[in-house]
Image (tube, rainbow, N blue to C red):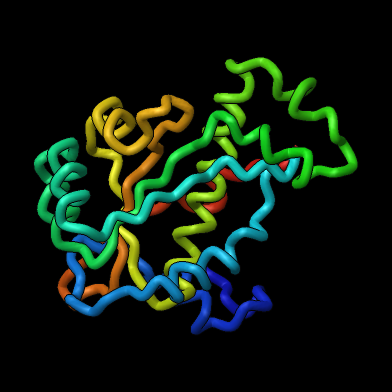
Length: 201
């Protein structure tokens, strides 16, 4: 049972961000301007991450040529959506994010050479924190009145070779973005209730 009045965010915003928001499978032909995508970033960049690391990297795929290269690595159920959505975002983790830490965490200038020096630890941290940033990004997309269609059905090795050939990034998800068509949603699936996932000790 939901209790929207217990939250300070008004009910309409709650609906837009969560209750009425769905993963979209098809979109209108309306263009998504770069200014909207920039506004989304300016909002969600404040989402918290561990040690203020910012490992998320986004490649916006707009051209037909780039789309066709991407589609060739998508699994069959995702090919049409990838080809036809107004814009596709490839969201990846940058394993070399620690190079930016001296200006992101100026009070700990040695972090990149101490805490994050080990590649294995850095990769795990990058993937976890980029996943957090992806969640904020999806909420930001909804806040902009757009719909997101996240996909993980793809050949990750192939996408990495094409779009991140330097080897320091790994794709985490591919998201179709745009203004949804009315029939673009599947019926909402069940969610677990509070008492099924929360315990108090």
